[in-house]
Structures are given as structure tokens and as C-alpha cells.
Amino acid sequence: MRWILHIDMDAFFVSVEQVLDPSLVGKPVIVGGDPAGRGVVAAASYEARRFGIHSAMPLARAKRLCPDAIFLRGSHGRYSEFSARVFSILDRYTPQVEPMSLDEAFLDLTGCGRLLGPLPQAAVRIHDEIKSAVGINASIGIASNKLLAKIASGLSKPNGMLRVLPGQERAFLAPLPVRRIPGIGPKSGERFERMGIKTVGQLAGLPRELLAEVHGSWGIQLYDRARGICNSPVLKRDDTRSISRETTLEEDSNNREFLESTLSYLVEKVTAQLRQAGLRARCVTLKLRDSNFKTVTRSRTLGRAANEDHIILATIVDLFRHLFTSRTRVRLIGVGLTALTGESAPTEQMELFQSAASKPWDRLYRGIDQLREKYGFRSILRASSRRSAGAK
Ligand SMILES: [Mg+2]
Image (tube, rainbow, N blue to C red; front, side, top):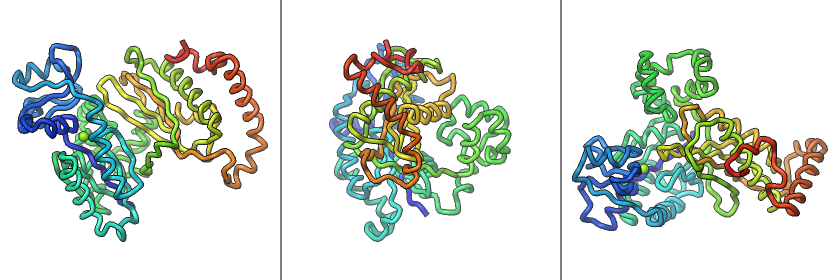
């Protein structure tokens, strides 16, 4: 059985501001900027949330709901610094830490019982250490997979801890509103509710074929999620051994072709860098941030380590098509490569058989790399990259 923790700081940006200026404690505080501007709420204290204010809400609206709220611009530098302090605590418990954002991470403590003692108590220690060393509250979900751990931490907020006992996964999920399933936003939640599907238990009652017919591959994921099934691994970050590239679009876009073209361009950039470093990647990550600043990442482990554009691009596009709907207005899009290995590293036996077939590809990409060295990166681009934000 796996032991997965999801750790999420409570109202992180606001909590940091309150540590730096304790006079803000207990007050409705909103980080985001000038309420007269066009920005949105990045974080709101629990006191502000009582007025119905939530993140991604226009600041002007927040001001109307709570005219006395204290509005702060916030500072990314300060938040990264506090984040680094939190992560340095997490790193002491296990190397298996997957950061999801500045204030959120998954930890895989499977097999750490001998070192850390009973794991629920280790989770309490992590919570208390963050509180005493950094000064902010965390909420922690503990479960046998990432999906359930994330839902549990969300339910335990603020400053709580919740464990889903093994064997209780479906019973735990059944009474929850469908919107608790990550990936079901307010709109699709509403649509399910109109169909009479209010709880996750009711969602789990829908046949797989029906979900697949209506929602495609996302429907199949929903079928699993409603049952508490999630096999996605905790991917540890490896700062020095990762290559990534992302771009903030000039205008938020829901144009599928344009976004896929931008992905194609980003893949060309990272694979060129990968080959230049003499490396191959085993894990490919897609990152999307929407117009509400909500960031989602999806990763897939490849059958073998690759440095060829077409292999990595096919994976990225597939991840993208699972995630993207025409309602998503994308603000930032990115591609990351991790689990890097040297090209000459001992390879699996399978690759012996593949090497003959992959030779022409090697030659092709080496040729492209040489052309670029001479005439610049944009001198040769895949046709699929030409509509992208980067190709201009
Ligand atoms: Mg948080």
C-alpha cells in the first residue's frame, strides 16, 4: 500500500503577509493588487472569504463585497522565499517530494515507516514544524493515492489533517459533491447536478460507456476518479536534471490549433536543448495555466527514454487533448522534461532492438541541430509549429 501526503498551505500569500506584519492577523486581507485595477484576487484570508470573496474573483467585485478589506499587491519574491523554507522542511522527510505550486506538494512516504515512525504522527510533525519554523498553517491529506490525498487536504482546510483509511476510498468519496473531484469545475459540476448527479457516489453509478461517450477520454478518467482510483506516481523534482520551457501568451486563448502549435514549438525547443546536453528524457510534463491563474500539470512516463521531437510531441499533444476543452482560456502553456538520462547510459534490452529503427531519426535530428547551429533556431521548424506564439 502507498502512503501519499498532500500538503497545502492555508491562504498562503495572505499567511506570508501576516507573518511579516502581524497586525494583519484576524483581518479581511486580499492579495492581488489595486481594487481599482483590472486584476483578480490571488489569495484571500479566511476573514475575507466570509464575505464570499474567493481567488480569481475580480478585485473590484471583492471591494464591493467587503469595502473594509485590506488590499495588498503581494510580492512573488517573498512568496518564493517562504516556499523554499517550507520545501526545505519537506525535503528532510523524503526525497519523494513533488511540488505542485509554491504552496502545495505531494509526498510519497511509502516505506518510510522505519525511518519516520508511525506515518500519521510524522504528518503531524511536518505540520508542526512548518508552523513553528515558517509561521504558517498547512492542511494535510493522507491516503493511498494522490487523488484522495488531495481531496482529503481540501476537506480538512483550514489547518486540518484528514486520513482516508485503506479500503474506505469509495465510502469516503460517495457522499461528497461531484465538484470535489479535481478536474470537475463549477460549470461541469453544474451540468452533472442538472442531470441529477450530485454526489461522487451517484457519478460512480454511471456506466463507463456512457461517460466515455459523453466526455471521451476524460469520461474514462472520471469513471476511475469516482472510484478513488489513481495510479499517478509522485514525481520528485530534480532541479538540475530537468529541462522545461513555458510561455505566457500575449492574449488568453482557447484556440486548439494555435495552442497545439505553440506546444509543438516548445517541444522543438526543449528537445533541441536535450540533445545538446547529450540527454534523453523519460518523463514528459504538460503545464497549463488558465485565465483564472489556475495551474494544472499532467505528466506521463515514456516507454523508453527519448530525445526525438515526434515522440515527445505525440505524448504532449495527447496529454493536452485529455485536459483541454474549448472552455479553457489558456494564459500560460509549458512543456517539461524530467527523469533525464545520459545518451550513453546503459539502456534496456528493448532499445537494442529499436536502435536500428531509430537510426534514421537520429540522423534527421542531428541534421536539424546542425542547421540551427548555422542559421538559427527558426531556420527550420516543424510545420506544426508554424502557427505558434514562438514562431513569429
Ligand atoms: Mg494553498
